[in-house]
Amino acid sequence: MCGLLGVVAPTPVNQLLYDGLQVLQHRGQDAAGIATAEGGVFHMHKGPGLVRDVFRTRNMRNLQGNWGIAHCRYPTSGSAFSTAESQPFYVNSPFGLMLAHNGNLTNAQALKREMFLQDLRHINTNSDSEVLLNVLAHELQAAATKYQLDADTIFKAMTGVYRRVRGAYAVVAMIAGYGLLAFRDPYGIRPLIVGRNATPQGNEYLVASESVALDTLGFQILRDVAPGEAVLVDIEGNFHSRQCAGQTMRAPCIFEFVYLARPDSLIDGISVYESRVKMGDHLAEKIRHTLPHLAIDSVIPIPDSSRPSAMELAARLDLPYREGFVKNRYIGRTFIMPGQAQRKRSVRQKLNTIAQEFRGKNVLLVDDSIVRGTTSREIVQMARDAGARKVSFASAAPPVRYPNVYGIDMPTRGELIASERDEEAIRREIGADVLIYQDLEALKAAVHVLNPAITAFETSCFDGRYVTGDVSAEYLSSVENERNGVKQAGEDGDAGQLDLNLVVSD
Image (tube, rainbow, N blue to C red; front, side, top):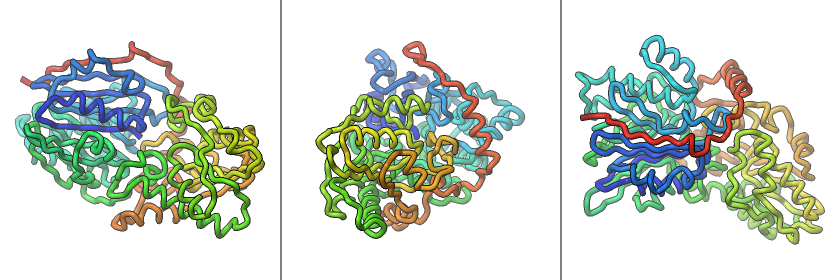
């Protein structure tokens, strides 16, 4: 789950990219980077930490040019941070290319071998994003005649990329001297949307992970990038697009709607906020039919992503809705913090109780999901410490039982509380008096009803069905072994930041 931006404009774009990254900060707090192009030179600055910490005035002044890309990152492989793996990535052969990627390639290791043995390209990091960059570079070289590029050549190269690359990917890339390229995997697992803004100087185009970036920067939504589609905006502001994948199916990751995306975003025509309201509606119906005599004095959300579900649940069951937890907004999202111990330590720094909302009451706590169970266990105990008589716990999502291999940081079954436990065992583990999970079909219905044209979703973390069809038990085992072998990296601080000014064309 990373955040992406790409923009082509008639005026400097450094401030647009910075502001857009701030809006997408929830998608990655590990590192941030911006690359711009000015004539035949790429400018780039990237480093570890939040957007506000990575970029200073001197960095922004160096990011000159009217088009560029930006990325905010969190690691999917379990490492705390590696400076070399911050994005965007760059190669200079046969064309100057910058690339930023959200997702995870499921055949990255096979592609690395191909790069070394067949394409004669060297991969410097463990990042699958660098692999993807080199595949794109190779396919552009194969498609180009005398190193000349045009839209048809670029789309031909993209056909080769789709033929070779598997997994989940939303990508923005810069092709030196030509323009901005954006593309989305054949299943549309990770989100990508394009917008336009008409200015007196000409049209501006912006591609982003979520529509909220378009809204806040004053762009009008054109549409989502379709699964298997490549979008190209040249440096003159001309817009091109083409379907480049052989077989496609729109199956967005349903966890974007449960937790990852901001509630004010639209993904594939679906309001994230409205989908969470619908989740609360379905959850209320389940409680009404399965636990009709459950004694509840108030419904309390776990801030922030569960709030729409909790409000709708309370309304449907005619129960008081209360805010019982205060969130420290200067603490990172615990779900995406690498390392179980770090997540556990941060829970009580992140949340504090309003004691009078718990003292002597039977409370129903509502959260978006239960992944590892660490946060849920701590929250239940906090409610008891604040004086709650009885603590029921409801999850707006089903049990997370399987690893996610498409770019979300839950890649091993051993870390998932529901992987080897039934609901009663989970209830005991988190210390709740009652535990209620959303049903998977109800979750799908809550999202599907808002755009009936989408009939499939990527739900592998709930049902173990991997939509790309290439995830085997052996692959999952190799991912788990790789993760368990990764040592946590230390903080790099300012020393880990990188500035580049690269001459890429005459």
